[in-house]
Every structure is written in structure tokens, then in C-alpha cells.
Image 1 (cartoon, helix red, strand yellow):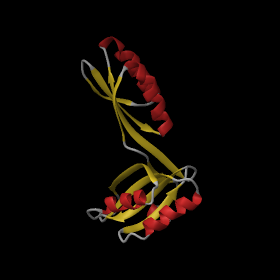
Image 2 (cartoon, helix red, strand yellow):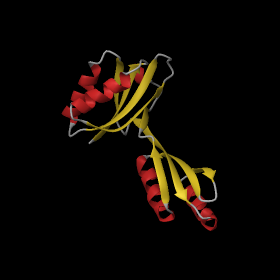
Image 3 (cartoon, one colour):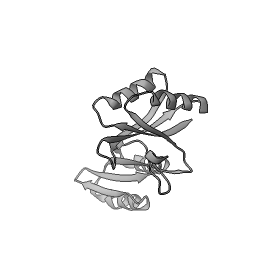
Length: 165
């Protein structure tokens, strides 16, 4: 089962390596990992999606991560109490006579065309993983050349911040 973790860490070189190495040493799979700045200059937020068999293994991951010196806070974000999104950029082969079809399809998904040339177009889409999967599948008939996805990011609902939980 996949679980999303928000891991707040001190913004120091090598911390991301320590976090990912600890999880892989324990033979847990990292499905996606995204790291970036937060509202605090000295804190980085790492959003991890881990694939574990049960709640016990999830607790093991959280327990092991909490032992790392640079880890400030860990929050498990479940689907009901948080908002999950992913960003994708999809390069599609595009003959000029088919551009209108692709643009109409892109508009249905509330995506954006961010680049167009004679032979291809690049589409940007953010949303749930299933939404991105669906658009990728539909664009397949046009000739998808490349797909780049960020992996999941998530934030808890309500006014509180992850550091406060």
C-alpha cells in the first residue's frame, strides 16, 4: 500500500541522500520523492511516497526516519485529510492538421499547452495521478515522445502546518 509522508528536515547538504538511503537499506520502495524549500529558510520539505505492506511497516519507516539527526518532523498524509497533486509535462508528436484535436483534448483536462513547434507540442498538467494517467493514455494515439512527472506532493487540509501537527 502507498503512503505519503511529509518529512521536514534541516536544509543541509546530504540530507536527502541520508533519507533515501535509510529507506532503501530497509528494503522499502520509494515510489516518488520530491524535495523543496518551505516557508522557513532553514527547513526543506521532502514528500515521500513509500510502498509498504501494512501499517506496521509504515510505523517502521517513520520510526527509522525519526532517528536521523536532521529530521525535524514527519507527518503521514492520508487521502482524506490532505490534498495530493502531481505535475506532468508531456511532449506529443503533432502534425499541424491534428493540433486542434490535441488542444481540445488538453482543454477537457484543464491542462495547458506550454510550447508548440512544427513537429511537437508540450503539455503541462497538474492533478491527481489518475487524471495524468488518463491524459497520457489518450495522448498515446498521437505519439507521446516524452513524459516527465514530478511525483506526488501533498499538503494537509485546514489551517495548520505540517510542523504544527
